[in-house]
Image (cartoon, rainbow, N blue to C red; front, side, top):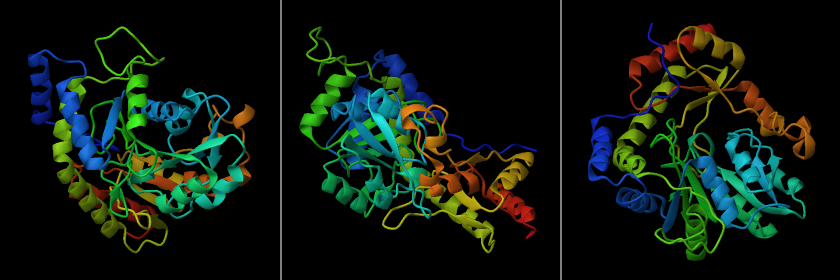
Length: 367
């Protein structure tokens, strides 16, 4: 029995040829392919500027540092998200303060955010989770009322829209990831989208050893080496060219899952949040007896992932100044208990989706 993985990147001869051409050309550091990839991303996202980072976590840290958020500051972060959303805040020198999520979408609950404000709050992180979007109207209005910056964590958000606009160009800065499980991949890699020329200049300095241009050994500011390579960018350009096919395929597979699981009262398939588009990062279920269902599917050769553990329960945040009680996070805790992710990727076959659906029905006695 062939095991069905949680995700598998769609890579082929075109990516191999593009990377080989970079090697043949002899310019493997950040160069012309990176510039072309950046311009293509800017057109897709709808932001006039952008810079690369080594990964999504460092893209977030870079964005926070460009906004001068650091020691003594606090950033509101949803309790349900990958830990990198919060560790980026720590890398910038600030403190993450967790906010519970909405029970239907598992996006940050703006209605609960006010209770987390202090005199040190400087920003709120809008995490577009599981391939759909936060309520950016409500979040933007909240941030404006309280004088907060908005940093979008769109690591899972390539192709995702909010009221017709691509995520990542709706806040002050928007951050993306190109890790191997993302909608398009360069193996590793991140991107910060930007609409403000002054912020763009600050981003360029921070990521390039404190200077805006290479070729000079004069460094006006303290910075880092957050560059990527043209090997990654060449792969990314090919992947971006495939994006319409990837989106169509993932959307079709998500619809097939919905059909295969229709009528089961024990589960709810997460879809698009109101006002948002959906690019299925996974097929996400809220399920009765989720842990048992997960074990049932794993035993049958289907790799399953649960929801992210609530950040306030993570060992790295559970003690000391970041500690916050469970009573503040009922929805994040329920999502972790009841949520699981089924595989979805472009090369997944319809027959595999049908098999997974049959296994779920068998578990609940509805086969």
